[in-house]
Amino acid sequence: MPTSPPAVIAFDLDGTLVDTAPDLLDTLDIVLDEVGAARLPRDETRKMIGAGAKALVNRGLTAAGITVEPPEFETLYARFLDHYAAHIADLSRPYPGLLDALDELSARGHVLAVCTNKLEYLSRLLLDRLDLTDRFAVIAGSDTFPVYKPDAGHLLGTVERAGGLPTRAIMVGDSMTDVLTAKNARIPCIVVPFGYTEIPAEELGGDAFIGHYDLLVETVERLLSRG
Picture 1 (tube, rainbow, N blue to C red):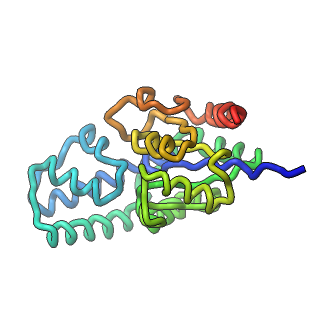
Picture 2 (picture 1 turned 90 degrees about the horizontal axis):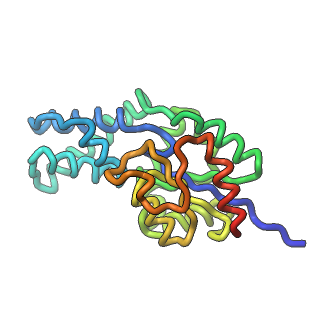
Picture 3 (picture 1 turned 180 degrees about the vertical axis):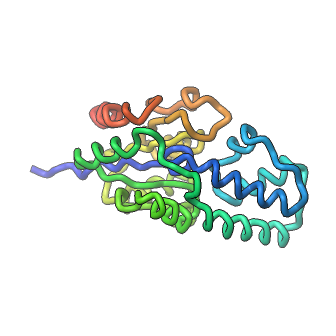
């Protein structure tokens, strides 16, 4: 009898696997300092995270009322990347309950992957520093494929590279970008509430919502059982 391929559980990174806001926003503060802008409130800048570092820098400068020409922006962006890479795990930590949930998913034979709009080298660096890299069969950043979230190709490419099928896959994320990506790929999405989104997580339109990683495994199994 043919057997089904293992299910692929693909996770967003920032705001889903790891609370990266402290190190990202500390680095944004450095960029704002360089251009002589006042630092922005953290409750405002947290909502700017999620579309990649370049978008974060652009949103931060715009919110601070700073306009720069493309060459200067690229210089600031490069400085952001250098500083962030050097401080990528100073304060960033996995969310409560995550490690136990990953262990249980792996024990059940599921394949774990990362599908993030963070650059791949930064994603790997962060996961390396937190000793998480080996838990994931695939780490796909915004530059891994020709497209990135919310394009379905990013998630579909991640699932394929992990040896799975879209019919046996689930996305776990914290933002509208993750929900839209999953919908575009026709893959169920589990939404978590501790990330970075202006819209309350339970209102994002995911297929399931969990308030803590203690609920992840049972929610994954329920969604997979739908066929």
